[in-house]
Image (tube, rainbow, N blue to C red; front, side, top):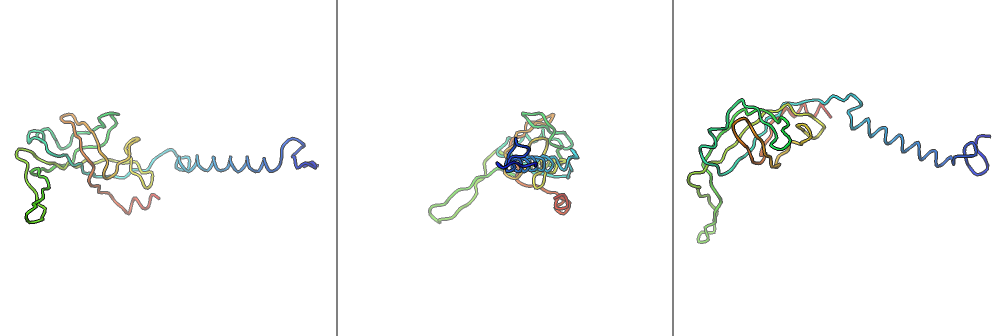
Length: 169
């Protein structure tokens, strides 16, 4: 009636081919739904304080790091947060003493290392935290700009509500 002797539906389409096509459509539909957060289109956000380490800067550089200034990505110009705080310490590097077979630090005269804390309302695409299209993750090299300074360094720490992030799974 509906299936002929060659296994074709209505004499035109093979039943096995139809099943495979329906499975592919179902998988694509589920993937589309899953990656768009169930079709809501609205991303959940989480407040994140992340720390950027900048190394071996002249002391005057830190006169231009101003708390409260907005920060944007140096390339895309997308907002990446606001400077919350910063601290400095004398730059130093690791040295080896061959006589005592030990390691130690030596200071670099006239240079400072800094840690700049930036606060961001990050979009959550569990387990990733994002600012626009960019992931915020420890170890990532960043090049940002504020109104007063260019900030180039590495993200070395992140502080956020872990329990709230877990709830967003």
